Length: 173
Image 1 (cartoon, rainbow, N blue to C red):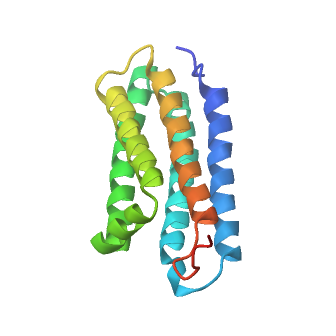
Image 2: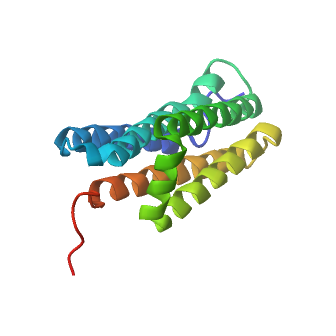
């Protein structure tokens, strides 16, 4: 049994990108204005940081498990389950933080971003579930696709948070 997964180098690079996203979210939060109308931005940046942390940890997780002696299949299955659990907790805590009213308001303010984010969440869950129940030769590719999709989700939310207008700023014609 090889102690190195073929995708290990690529997943390590993706983990570094996840850490970078966390850093950008923290810097953006520090530099943002402190008005109360920015609460949706604050929640989005917190979600971005959580997604970046999840990407960083779960990108290197299969290689760590494999290095500890688990088979490649068991490593991918365990990581798929970890993605599902972490995503479920993340989505639930985001809904709890925001409350139903603020979620509807945020979705109305930028429907395109909301549609993209929800589609990527669905794709991420499907990829993780397929690794959990059907680990095999394409599991590494599915995990890389999950990590890249999660990066896209975090990037979409980050750009939306940083470049969206505050509710207090009137639109110019």
